[in-house]
Image (cartoon, rainbow, N blue to C red):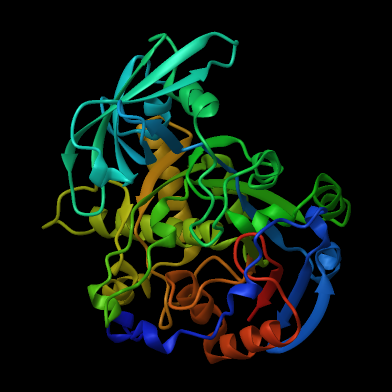
Length: 416
């Protein structure tokens, strides 16, 4: 059985990160970043354009095609002061992100509220120009204050506008909190991947920001396969770990969408290497295995009801290690395909709270393209799970050799 990371202390996963090493802006050229290659513990300094020549032969690269929505709204109080609303997740009339973004006239979202102490009661307003150039107004009213967040009722005129268009026209890109500046026209392009398609993220899958159409074409020319999953990155990805033990840190939930075509592609590709582009792609791929395990376990356990909600919980891999020892990745992927066939759909919709930390055994992923992550973060725990104690050597090398850190920073290719 794998070691259980519940007793891990996040203080064992820290390193000194000077503020001057955090990249505040993207480089003028997406592919001009550095690439630190860690191959079986050996480190090599490269340029990101070298990536196709550094990948394992026959690898399948899996990208997260989520698109960042302009989820940060700056509204004004009747007295003139400003309130910042950061839309986190829809609550009513739809909890489905896709349906919520198409909602017209009114909706309710869970939001972070900035400068909210001066917002006593009544609506705040935001005037904007709709996509077709017509004047429009958004009204927001706080209905329920929760711990750290609030439920906000939105309504807007003209009411026939979908909420997605309201956000596109009235909102700002939600840059990470460590990029302490207003978003710009440059960010509107560069804080999206070139292959972004499915709207719904409130943070970019930043490992993909380095890819250009030319690099994607070169990957194809060199015979590498590519595939796409969707994980809508939530604000919880920036949530600091404040608990003394990981057992007391609740992982945030994020929705995933994966097509039957991608599941079949993964099955056909085995046992050749799969490289996740970004931690969100990696979490999605590993979630697929545990979803399949859950389906098979439920089907074979008379005492338990059939699975009705496709969700991987924070500790499922560590609690079900004995069950998983009897279930191969091929069996898990096949179970998911059979589930889709039985339900008459070709897109898997599920949620994940999966925590990948030292002690985790990887089932589908053999390598990772990723940026350099914050100290004491769950993303750093994921890197440590992949590399083992060698993660410190990688980060010390990056710090000693001028690499830029975090969202707009440089990249790494990690091949354990």
